[in-house]
Image (cartoon, rainbow, N blue to C red; front, side, top):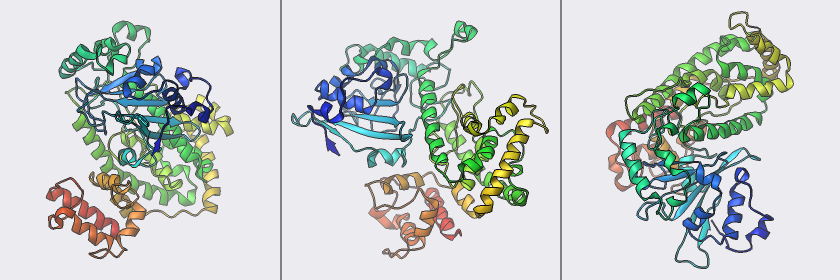
Length: 504
């Protein structure tokens, strides 16, 4: 943690003036705090650019460190670009009232950075305390490397306008009216601009004129989803491009992302095709369990009887892409999604959002201009020239790559362990990857498997210690902390750890 002085910071940052609204980032925020002598959340909100105070969404049931209610919601200010997002709530009795949370996408690093700005009204010398980037209390939920959690369409539970293009529910309308009745005079909410639009049905559902003219404006939740998906995509591509085998796997990655070019094994050298086909079947079969859990969780969080208004990609449509990424590039895809559930593979996004297939295609086309011509003459049959072009390029590239880098097919048992990950494991990972508890790699399957069978704990190996800590006999030492798990949850965790320890 570091203290922020209220004077002289402009010289330290080398900034001469405030950034324009579209370029307003965290450094601009620091400059603004210094220039305006900000010492309370209210003075900061008053000084923010109009762009941030015009584009926002309201959370009435929060899963974050900041509480929220329908009349005192948590506000997410995201502007037109969402490169810097600020959040706050509005009632002094709420958790997180004395802080403003920030999330910044850093383009030079293609990573997300979370911080907390704490305000201390009783300290006139240092009224503001700014956390280090991605502190433990943030990464406990947002993982490491940090990722935004904004869920995926067609529902954003607990956020006004939670059903995509369905308008406000009756409960939401009542809550919105209560919020609007005091907004104009509220110490914090009064700085929000264009607030009346939040009660207008046209904000959430395109009217007939907009649909006819094609001038449809997405509702706030969907706009934020599209913007975050774009940043997440840049982060994913940056990670993939850093892998030594990326260029060699690029043709098969493009084909796998589109999932319309036939069997994935056909893109590998003939000598590998039988092994790849068998391995892919194991991967696909065990992935179905994770997909079912995520889709069930998504359905349970959905309010109302309405289904999605538009077709969105199912998790299974990305199984081929995930296979190539995890097997070929050795990159985990468990944190790619914006969904609430860890280990989810749901990449759904509003229509028109840039997707992985488009991005990978553009990357391939930089070094292969002929792929554009092939794509222009697609026939979508067995003789499709586009798919044939990708297969030829892929077979040659992968033959060279795997000739120099022999591949070891991962055991099906490891896939089964990954696919059967208990939901409560996320609680273990959150605490043991922060300063809350001793460090243990609960989110890293390979590292955890190695640790489980070693160690000199009070009851033997780490596995023995964990199995004891899951039982009621552990008393105050029972895990997970702060929870009273039932017998089914205990057995689910026990089975996972035992299976993982036995896997090769």
